[in-house]
Length: 224
Length: 297
Image (cartoon, rainbow over all chains, first blue to last red; front, side):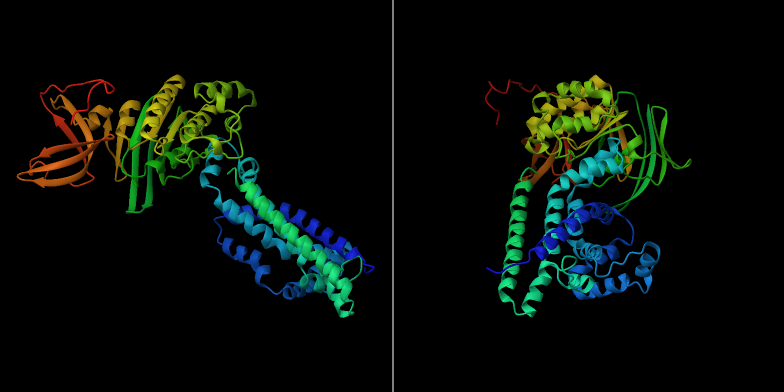
């Protein structure tokens, strides 16, 4: 058995967990807006959110790296005012993952909101409830399957990302070297055995997560 | 007293329709809106509830102005005291029957009213069930009960029984009538069902091309009025067939199919799907109890 460094695996799980938690909070208002707004910006914004689905991760990573750069723009602002540098740091990695996994959380939620009959919201308004009360007590509880599948997909997707992480985070051990990058690293150094172990662990976790998703969907959709 | 005078331009499947309606409804009165689909009946209810905005006009309910285009008043649905029963019931699947009712409470102290309405609507046994497990008739009861919880100033029923079979309809019509009397609610019902209209409403308004064409007691509006016939039925033509010198009309009356003969000149311009009256003068029909007598025919 190889003497394996488990750090990258833990880092991966930590990154995925934090990203997913933030995404759940962030995606509810975004999806709510995208599903119901009469604004002309609706479709351009939906396209924007979905961009990470089609964009090479290196493109997203490249732009993020530019944005994080302390030499200009937002990176410089952060550096000058808060002395924070996001490039090659764990928070920078989280920010990149958030953008990269956003469509996996937002798209199921938007579809969920759109699948609820308009009469749910209308009935709630007629019963005297505000939009926020309606969201909390009527819409979100009926979106549990969408929320759960969004969360599971975001988690799995964050675990599997490579391009963005490599561009934004590099591979600093214990800080930004996640499992997918560790595999690359091990292969580059011709340490195939440990690459195998990392790969197998990622494969197993991903499979388990997707399997859970299908079971959960089957079970949760029943009562509706 | 409820007064409304509303105008709205609608884009319906048949083209542009100018909805123009004026009506007064007395306290506790039961009014039915009757008319083909696409004549703006549902839109009218939605404008009353604040879910659709009229182009112009006024809505006044018990002295309170809900909408006035001239004064720029337009109360949101939350502030209009409306009980609305949707065609699809719009029950919240994540809540039990009791929770659906409790959600409608404006005052947390109104729990007693929830219990009372659960009893009145015969929902006591079902209180902890979720809507997904209820039958159509039970869902309809929950929807009506929920609309009553918030103590509305007006009750709006949008074809509430259209998804149910005839027998259940009759039963629920009785319950609606009972509940409406008990709470003395001004009620507007949208319905196509003549039986329902006769049974429930004190007044019927026929909406045609966006305007109210006729209004009055159901008997006066649909009864043809003034004829000295002994029996009169309303039905829909299913088939017109020529037989020698006469025509044989097959007509659906309620759930029964009736065949009658007609002279070609009487049936001129009549088409399948037309609503017709069958009137017979000066005769003595035999009436038997349905479970004892052999069926005529």
